[in-house]
View 1 (tube, one colour):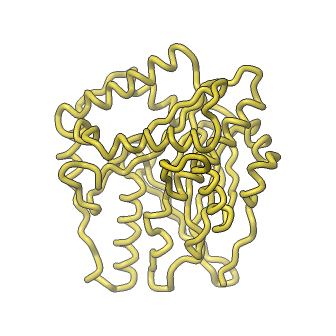
View 2: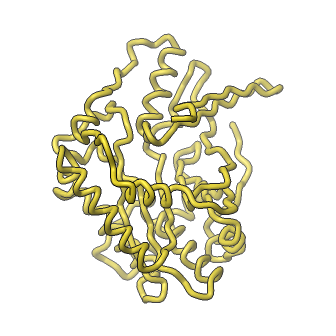
View 3: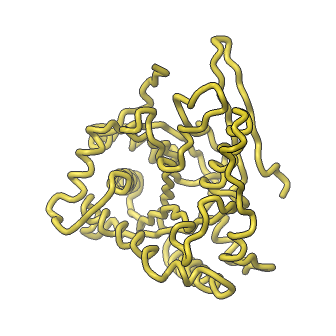
Length: 316
């Protein structure tokens, strides 16, 4: 690994405020592990050693044994999924509680048997906007794939400890053809519900143990086959709203704002990270898209009817 596994920076402003930034390699940690690291560090900083939960460094490798070698085709696929050359930019959009409630109501309109969370409804609303932006940006719309990060810790059998460290997540994958009829919000919610429901079945158990790699390999083979036929648009989503970053207290109080770094490198991906606002009622969507689609999204009246582009925040 050429790059350091973790980088930290503390910035002290003239007003006395501070910003603590951290970046870690996703090869070794996921969001839950990053939060555990900050929680332990914060407890030590406060002098509250009784509040330290010892991380489990072994459990993840017992549930998901490491492999000595991985097919090059799978490595190439993951590289393509994670990093694509392009002019990517990141923008912050905020959805207040009223907007989220309206989006959630729209997501189940006419579907009395469909249930959804506000996070899932908002995810599908943003995905719908991406599909529209892609259609406007191209004369020949591509199939659209949503991949949503799923924490496997609570879904294994038996459940893993929340203090288990590592990169213990996999993808829920939803697929739509923009030329078809199922690109309205309620239909997208049903599609995503079906993808995430898979992790409430015995599927997660097939990912475990020595034979678990075969299940993951089959997932990669299916994506490779799809890519060989046509190159779809891929939009990744992850939610940090339940990780508890806003509760991290180093001794000077809880942070009044948790944010993402606002700039990415020349090779990145279409990625949306959802984080709760300081009052816990709204959601910030940190969206990274290529410049062409972002320009379309920023002018989309249907999207902007619910999303506020980069509003000011207050520490009060």
